Length: 368
Image (cartoon, rainbow, N blue to C red):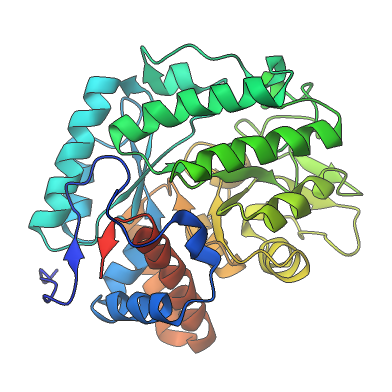
């Protein structure tokens, strides 16, 4: 692939660690009606090849359970990575890999990478070994305690330069095999309250928060990591999301639950993450979500790995960030191929990419 060097129209903060204190924007500007921000987004977008544009949608895994460092850095150098999801590792290992990723992106003239993590209260100690102990969500009983836990998580993330948290869990109930104590409980009002508290505290710190697992994984039977899981009939957890969208949550993660026996929201055998009816029709259309839509993991959850070309299908459904596809380069090739013969889909991809660029600008990763 041809190496692309950015013109001197804008500066790239490729070695950034933590949020950019001198950014002219704050995270809430992502949703602002701002013609100048629109112009800057278009300017950055115009400098990218289509391969680099699609690369912005790709989120490979890193850390002890992720891609080998050499593979990851090659993908970054070639403009085939827009974000990274950090799995298990020590602070020191994460910090060093993030440094290398930032340096590689800068040296090869690529847009800075947005570093992300599933830093839920109950998962933090597994993601960052030696991190400050925090209770699982189900153990948190007050907004004050929840804000304190969120601040502790923010501190860990900001020290590493991680600016996208794939949390909080918005599911109802603690009985599901995959969710358990990751949920704030069974009462919808409490779950909304604690989600809003987590999101506000996270985003005020300059970290994008993510409500998950849309449209609800708490009241189903089974674990999407191990099998297909079905929402049978009514979407009982859907009511959690409108208040979070109205609040301004930056991203929503769509789960791999298949919806059956629901005339309006049936997914026709596909997981919700691959269903245009759910991603574009329900989340974008009916609920009016204008932020970043993220897939749940595409590489290790059997509810979706059994489906061929799942990354392309998720993108065609309307997802913006494709989290941990089985094969990053195959995903890019498939998306580029579909773009070449489907003009409407091509414009949809461009819209996704512009949202990602806009987020990077308001986070201070890209200075224009």
